[in-house]
Length: 320
Image (cartoon, rainbow, N blue to C red; front, side, top):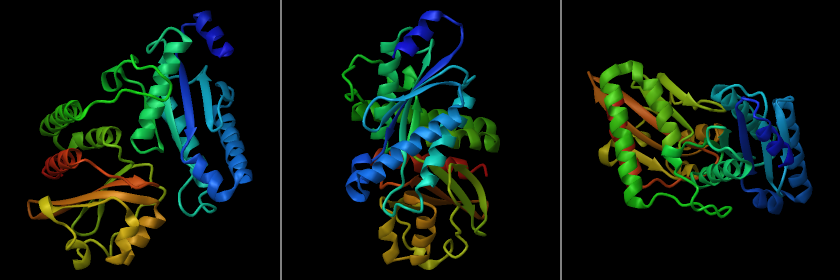
């Protein structure tokens, strides 16, 4: 706190990111594998933070499983995203072979000085809000504060954040999808990459895969540990029979797949995919299969969000 306040007071005309980390499911890690293992996890996080920060700011631990960074020389948001993605990947892989039920993952909230606030308290509240939005969205992700998306900090009690009510959320997401559709209609195939990245941010999704009916992966986006091998799955009757209304399939917990398609279950498990939405669409005599994947945790989507995903998927398929 003293360091951050001193840097802010120095008015050095640089940008600085305030970054707050929280270890996902840390109580479960301690309860399942013991507190000595939990201490090892915390020590490893500290090492990863220090190695990747490499003198570009100050880092510290300010709670049982909570960490803090204030940067000095992270030049822009692209540099920040590379830093955070690298740290998350290194931590996940560090314990991948030692934890059976879930990975060691981080939820992260970020605010930017001076854009998001001119003092420590305001920056802290905004980063804290994003941290707990990351928790609410399913963990294992980072959220960078954006007032248009995340609102203000009127409800500023720590760990308590005001979220959109259902009607506001539905209206916001409908407008969001409308903008994406207009982008696809305007730029056609050139818009697909940008549209998919926007979907990843807004729909609590970790990865997107698109295949054609020759089992060829034609598009992927997201931080995949490994891409599933679908050559024995797509066009397999046991798999295709699971598509229902709107040519879609929603799996909230991948272990349930084992009962009806062991091959698909094995591929998804190897890739840390724990939930997905899939849909297929046919244009110009070609079929396109969409997979919206969630890593390391189960997921339940609202009917509204799922339907909006299907709409934009169909629009994307029309330009591929």
